[in-house]
Length: 405
Image: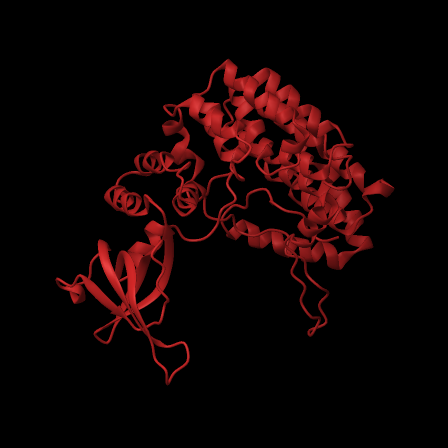
C-alpha cells in the first residue's frame, strides 16, 4: 500500500507535457502560484454547508410525505415537504407550511431532509437534499453558523470547534471543513484557549477519523507537558506513523517540547530507512515551522534538517526546492555535488539542481549552469523560462507532492 501511495504521489507531481508542434521539447511545469491559504494539517475539501446556504435561494428542513408517482412518466411525480424549520427564507415561500416538490421521493418516517432550493421562473426548484436521521443537531448547527458568519474568523472557528465531535457525521465533517478552509493564523490564537484534555481524548480515540494533524496542532497551543507525552506515544505508534496527520503530530509535539520534539523530527529526516511518507511528513512539519512558526526552531537548524534529505534520492528534489525557496545558499556545494551521484541521476532531480543553481548567487552555481548549458541547453532554457514566470507570479510555496520521474 505504501508503495502504491508513493507512486500515486510521484505521478501527481506538477508536470506539464506539451506536444512539440513548434519543434519545442516537452516542458515541465516546475512551480505554480501558491494556493489560497488553508489549514496546513487538514485534508478535507469541498464547500461548507454555510457557503452552500449562502449560495442557495432558500433552505428548508422537514419531513417528506404524500409521495405520488406519475404513472405516465417513470420515476416522476410529486412529494410534499412538511416544513419544520426554515434555514433561509425566500419571499416565494410566504406563510406556507408545506411545499410540493416536483420529485417523487418515497417517504421514510425515520428520515428528514435538509433541502437546498433555487427559485426559477416563479417556481421552487430543489437541487440538493441531505437526508438526516435521528435527533440531528443540523438545524441548530446551521442556525448558529449563520449567526456567526459575519464575525471574525477566530470567533467563527471557536463555534465550529464545539461541533467537531458531533454525533451527526454531516455536522462533524462540515465543522472540520470549516477548519480545513481556514488559514493557520486564524486559529493560532484561538487554539490557546481550547480544552486540551478534550482534544487529547479525541486523539487517543481509535474511532477518530483523519483529523490527527489538526487536533495535534491545536493541542500544541493549549496543552501541557502531560499532553506532550500523549503526542509522543502517538508518534511512537507504528500505525499512527503510517496514517495521515503525522506532520501535525510532529508540529504539535515540537510546540510543546521544542528541544525533544526537534530531536525526534531530525531523527526522522536523517533516517533514509524510514518510509517515504514518514520522511515526507517530517518535511511538511519543517515547512510549517519555517513558514508559520519561525519563533520555535532556529532557521539554521531547519535548514540542516532539510539538508539531511539531500542524499536520499527519492526525496532530494523536494528538499532542493525547499532550500532554494528559502535561499539557503550555504549548502550550495552539497546540492551541486548531487549531480555527480549515480543515485541522483534522475531527470527530476537534475532539473531541481539546475533550478537551485540558477537562483543561487554564488559563482560556483554560475559555473555549474554554464556546464549544464553546454550539455543540455534546452533543459536550462526551459527552466529559465519557468523561473521568469515565478518572478512575476505570486511567490510559490514549497511543492507539496512528488512529480513523476
